[in-house]
Amino acid sequence: MSVLPPSGAIVILTGAGISKESGLDTFRDKDGIWSKVRLEDVATPEGFRRDPAKVHGFYNARRRHLVEDGIVPNAAHAALARLEREWRGEVLIVTQNIDDLHERAGSANLIHMHGELLKIRCQRCAQPFAWVDDLDQERRCPDCGRGGTLRPHVVWFGEMPLEMERIGDALAECSLFVSIGTSGHVYPAAGFVQMVRGQGRAHTVELNLEPSESATMFHESRLGRASELVPAFVEELLCR
Ligand code: APR
Image (tube, rainbow, N blue to C red; front, top):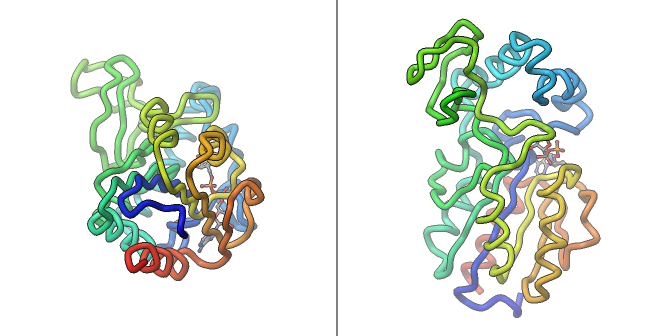
């Protein structure tokens, strides 16, 4: 990887595949989340308006699974936290995941572009706050006191992902862009590799169990499980 300056900025996009070996389902694998429930019903503003109890039930089950079933970061999350500690330049993780496994592995320079499962927000106050319990329509907002206004702090289809300006700036400046465990089905994340290729300088790498929809856009594609590929890739970067 000769093109990468020793302290060049690195941007890492992660998707559900990096958390699969920690015991969290992906979305589009054959037994994935969208094979069990319609995303229109539980991951859109229309679905929430139509049946808020169904949406709360969907996220309550995922929140409980993350918090109560011994889900822990795997070697891929740990390797990215090591890279942030030991790399001389900036390492930014942009995750599509709403779990907290990157944080629990020790990553700090992190953007949750699709929100966070362990946060909720009031649709009146808009301020997100930490939440690990079940949520329902009766629960009142602790700030404004209104009922029926609390929702998961998760970006639904048709809503704008978070911190897109900061992400765009980082993609424009990076020397290395790595995509890990994402199928490349959902924009804007799936378009990040084109944005990086457009700036004409960075090296781009995909680490995935199978080629994503955007695989041909990457300079380099390595196939395998994240818990094996990512630690090996980080070791290679740090020991060049
Ligand atoms: N290691 C590496 N990659 C894996 C592993 C693994 N152990 N297991 C699965 N994968 C890969 C799959 O091959 C697939 O390409 O991870 C990818 C998961 O793809 P999706 O299920 O589509 O998840 P993701 O790309 O994160 O979805 C993006 O879609 O539904 C929305 O908001 C949701 O953030 C999500 C977005």
